[in-house]
Length: 340
Image 1: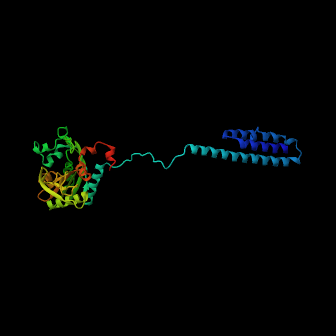
Image 2: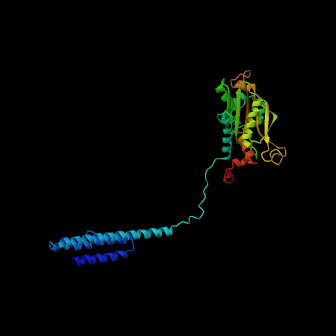
Image 3: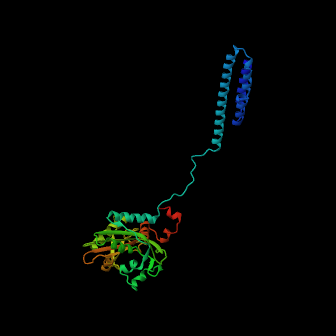
């Protein structure tokens, strides 16, 4: 029996060393070490041994089993390593090759400019207010000194939803709504960014665009305060060397009223094609709040004064980024948007 065990060990080790796969190794494990395997069959003959031989053969049988299990484990590890190396070789990646590019999300240029405008006025002590985009004729026109049949209504060709209800043509209605809510508190300093709608569509106009209305109300507010505020805004938005120019204008809700120009962002005021060789670019309208608007908002024009201004976010963005077509902002062309 001792010879059989030694012969079994030598044969098994040689067979295991030639095994080519994990399935074959499993078959060999069952063949040599299973309940009906060769080693078990040899050990069944121990009953015929003498009491002196049994301990010796038992110890040898355990050694044979241990060596076979070790040989199986080593060969299994070798085959697994070989399989893994083969897979790695087949699936290897050249890490020096450029990766597959993918588009990442980012802020729209109009959102970036609007946030910058908000940050500037928040820094100056203004609060941000919002209002409905579907507005009543009263807040969009009448409370802002646009009486019925007023010719100034023709300046803003509107989208009416129903009689007396329209898509707001400017964010100025938020001014009246805020005044109604805050009256008679002082001071009031508010900006109102948001979307507005007009029947207009060309390279410099859009039927939907974004505006920022701003106003301040307090005792002894002057046009000089308005000018100082807008000068500071222009310097923060376009650079410290930016100059401003105020030209007389007309708006029903302000008196006196003015258009504000800044020195050309392309030539610095020297004159070029962008500014039609004038050195100036228009950016917004402004003025002192009309007494009738103050009354509509619940304030006494004998006690308080205020100023208001309104600007188009697209207009500011076009000047800031030197663009000549507003429609680029709404075309959703990733080649354009990715530049920001």
